[in-house]
Image 1 (tube, protein in one colour):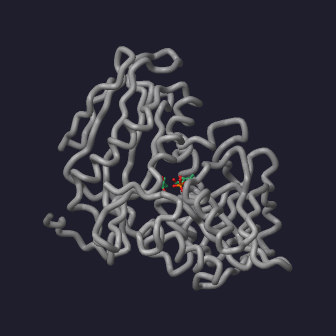
Image 2 (image 1 turned 120 degrees about the vertical axis):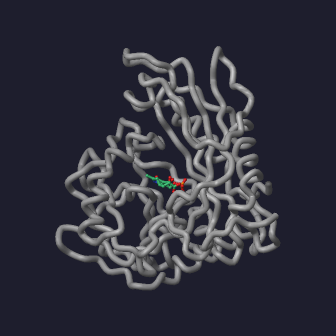
Length: 340
Ligand code: PLP
Ligand code: COI
């Protein structure tokens, strides 16, 4: 295999064209065979429900080159299940788990030359997505669906940030409602948050933390990640992460809750009052794109809560565990890697 000629060490989270994508269509009650394509455009009806009524959900997952040169995808079964959960909520037809995984595996294999080298620390990001494609003007679920996967090599999500990121609590915008679709990776949730994230970036922050929409009191998550803080009790560190009906159930966070316990930390998955910001010694923003982005500071109501400009010891330990498993240097004790 001859690797693509890219500056692997300086990739950001930006679209780099790759060789092949795949499209499946749900028509007449069955999923089509995969269509592998070199053209990255889609031909859709103007009246597709995805375009007008938001029947559009997506996933994000990564394939890593391991230390021994093999390539593996991290927890694709979890992404398949989350897409099914989202599809159910938006009355869409979801791809079965085996089809979802087959699509991801094939896209990694067929774009092998775009999997960043182990030493670069970068990864191949996979973007599966599902669209309602029936042409209709009435507001009701589509009959026909399109499921596709493309890939792009990525480096750090918060490229340009220092070793830790700066967040601010947003009190102007709610990302999602408790009885809405904040727990689904629905395209519209990201449009809903763009004005908050853009304003924060204009003011020099890397992203925002949203508050819950019912009371504007509890921490939800950032625009692209879940969140944790670290507290210290008599029994040692606690990994404290918000429980809320309006946040996405992050697969990274789910994994970190397990690894935190393995490290002997207490895990508190519960509503987290914004007033607790002052009780954290460390904080992190976690997701597939971001990995674990150590949080250096959070601004709330004009006050800055400082967590340091280098990752703290708990964050460092979690980073070592997670990247060690993802890169195959620590052993895959939970069976989280799917070798391709
Ligand atoms: N929250 C939001 C809003 C996200 O977009 C993401 C990214 O996928 C996450 C959390 C993290 O989820 P995961 O760890 O499954 O990638
Ligand atoms: C991810 O981390 O996979 C995401 O989807 C976050 C962002 C790119 C929307």
